[in-house]
Amino acid sequence: MQLLREFYEHVSPPSSAAIDQEEAPPPPPPPPSHESPRWHEPSTPQELAMLSMGCLEKMLTIFQARQRNSQLQTERLERELAASRLQDENLSSSENTNRINHYHKETPKLFSTTHRESANITVQ
Image 1: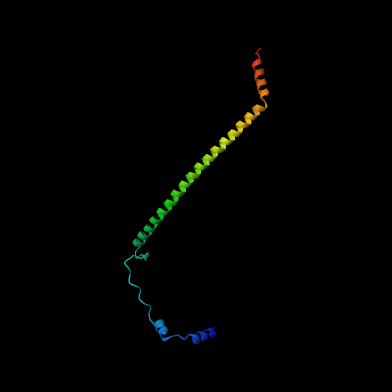
Image 2: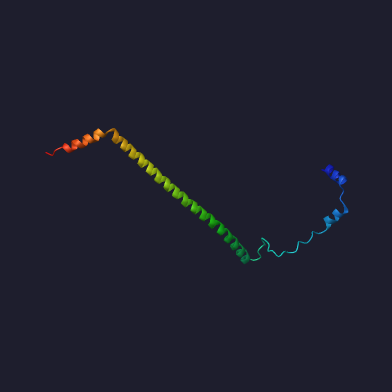
């Protein structure tokens, strides 16, 4: 550490202007501009409450917009789900109809014979 200090002192000795600046007090803050500051420390509980309410009102509009978007997306997804379920029902009923028709085509004699036999039954 001492080696670094000696190196720094020998390579770049401090100027008298730098020494004067170190001892001088910091410059005064710039004059206030005409724009209001983004945040200032509230001095009373009422002022804190007013600032808090303003902040909450801004957040409320943001969250209401998010909620509205979420609701619209949910409704869209519910419509898509209902349409998908209806399409599945239509496809499954179409498949069942095709199976029944296929079954009837494969066994027409069974149904026609049974029907004829039942028509020829006489009650005693």
